[in-house]
Image (cartoon, rainbow, N blue to C red; front, side, top):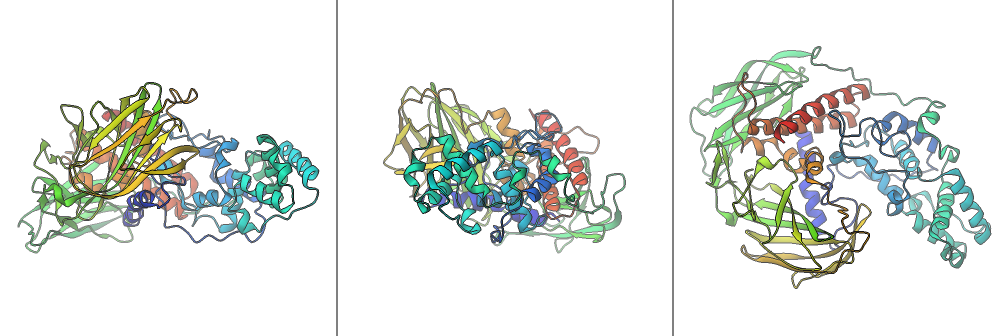
Length: 623
């Protein structure tokens, strides 16, 4: 059922707040632009390898599980990667590039494999693979930038400078060392620090590769294609769950029941309120029907075709806003589904809204700075926050953010249909209502002309209670601000930013101020490292980090969008958005099932391809 997926993906907002509130500033893997923090299972207790990880086992697993995306050689060129209709647009990192692992440890690799990266369409493998298997594939991919010649050269250099001196640390310690840290520690233990420090970067990399390989089994497979290695060992058995297709899906006749309740203190449920059941097939074609609630708020839909490849959601309109249940997939073994709906009274009082975190990323290039901001909001009331600002049927304004004077809006992390831009081009109004007590993310991109000195002043329309962070690249451009003291360098996926930040407690109407100065270096001029074009950002984040907003609850959009399709009508833009949101939920649920070993590889990729095809079609229609 999708409830499990919902609870997991709600962790996105918590991860962002954790990122914002870190005392040492922003560190680690999550990115603010290319992706938001990954949707993962709760962090697993790490079980460090008791013996040397087996690279041959890692290659076998890689050949079975990973080549479709990461490619046979690890260059990120698998058959599922590309810009075609049935492909994934976000390209994985190149494992053969030494820069990919330069700032990463094997433990980082293991954690990524364990917890997954849903924003990059990579499921968690903590249930599908054992600890031994995850460590094996982690070290196999971690060492893909090594070659036999590199290791041989490193051995010769190490023997020359350190003789036979120095023992390698235990596996648990090795897993937590980058190659450079391993090299330095081993050199110190062998009394060869001065010798190692005199080596150039490539020589140091060679010695580190030699040292790392000394703690691994089957090192002879380094540099060989994974498929060749896998042919010599027993294949990893796929999951045995039989495929369920639209044509052959098991089904049963059942019922969908529930009650409508009002979550606002003192709120009531109007008698005779109409609720709508929406049944969505695997291609997201919709059939809907209505019933009136009973006097106690309950409702029931009988003679429902419950199918394993169908999704179901119940919605209702209250005070011109659409509210909905969770979206669930059918389970023919449980023919009665319970889909309760909670409605809320409405407040447009901005004092109930707080900015609980703000990250501003600045990338300076020749003549321009590109800015991306992630706002995290919280509604402290027991009412849904939505104003009387009317845009379309069942679509009203909620939050409004202002961008600095002189800025030009570039786009949003998810579909622009969600946002309304003011006549001056400097205000953005969100139309997604904000539920009581739930996190709400708004992500906006804009740019400003830049000639080496720029004062940025941005009005804050809501009170701020939480951390505020500023990240700037390249390091030739710096910031000065009496509000945001320096935090030092912050590395996000091999891009180093200058970090600034503080924890704010400020009323609405304050202005965020900082001054940029310095020229982008020649190598960075015109380079938009960390900022991706809007036409690329939209689909990547919609199926990845942008799902932070969407996967946290389809009901958020259902509550702020137009009614569903009539079966014979073409979808309107707002209807298309509802379908897009639902498709993303389907993909997330499919990933969960696959990661849990409930779906075999062939079925998983077939269903994902079908969902991705439909998603691409809808996004093209919205473009």
